[in-house]
Each structure stands twice: as C-alpha cells, then as structure tokens.
Amino acid sequence: MTVHILQKAVITVSEMARLVGLSRARFYQLVNAGVFPSPVYCVRTRRPIYVEELQRVCLDIRHRHHGLSGPVIFYTKHSPSTRQACPKPKPVAVDDTVLNVLEGIKALGLTSAKAANVEDAMRTLFPVGVVGREQGEIIRDVFVHLARQNHGNNVGR
Image (cartoon, rainbow, N blue to C red; front, side, top):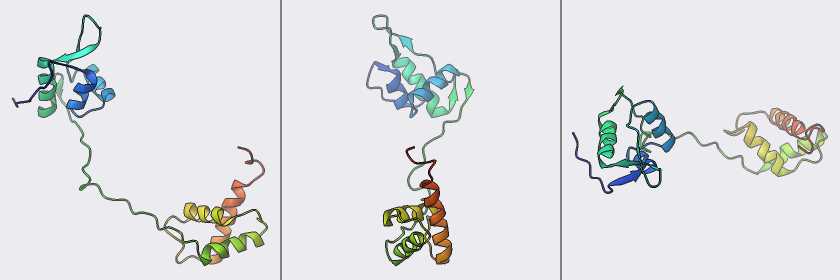
C-alpha cells in the first residue's frame, strides 16, 4: 500500500474527485458503478463527505487501478509533449488575390460584397491557402459561397 499524505480529516466530494484526478461527474459515475466507496453524510449538514479512511481507500484505488468492484482503467490527459500539434491553416493574405477575387465577384453581379467578406469566405473555403488554384475557380467558389449567404431566404436569420 502506498503512503498518501492527507491534509484534512474530512473533505467534500469535489475535493476527493480532484485528489484522484477526475471530474466530479465522472467520480460520481464511478461511485455509482461501485468502483469508489460512497461518501458518508454529515449528520448536521447532510452533505456528502469523505473521512480519512475513505480518502485512503479512494487514493489506493486510483493508484492500483483496482476498484471495489474489480479492475478499472483510468484515462489520463495527454501531456503537451506527447500531443501532436495540428497544422495551422495558412492565413489568406489581403493582397492582389483578394482584390482580384472581389473584382471578379462584383463583375458577376454581387455588388454588395466587401473585401472582408471575400477574405472570410476564402479562409472558410481554402483553409490551407489558394496556391496552385486557378483564379476563375477561386472566384466561382467564393461567389457561390457568398451568394448562398446573401440569398433572400437567409436575410434576417
């Protein structure tokens, strides 16, 4: 049995859940499943509490991965060093590309479009950038995207 240093004689369910590294909701699920012991209730306040002995039992269960009802697996959070970073989308530069697409969209009849609308649509449609795409294809896709947003049925929603 491992040695655990207990600082308080009585703790709340939230504190017990924190000590074993679980959320309060997950801790209650495991109590109801019979993995952890149920708390005792304070006679005066009627609040659930864990006394020193129950704290030791809970900490031992967490350490040994063996609950009152049998073996249990506790999943741990990934440390930042083991988690692989997701590639960040390349930002679409507000340069000639955005201005050319805006000009093309206005020529197609969507005169209410602004550079910010085009830039947002390009970020949504092309999260990794527009390199290697035909300008006509970009204008078409952005036009369709903005036209769907500005459709008469969507106004005021």
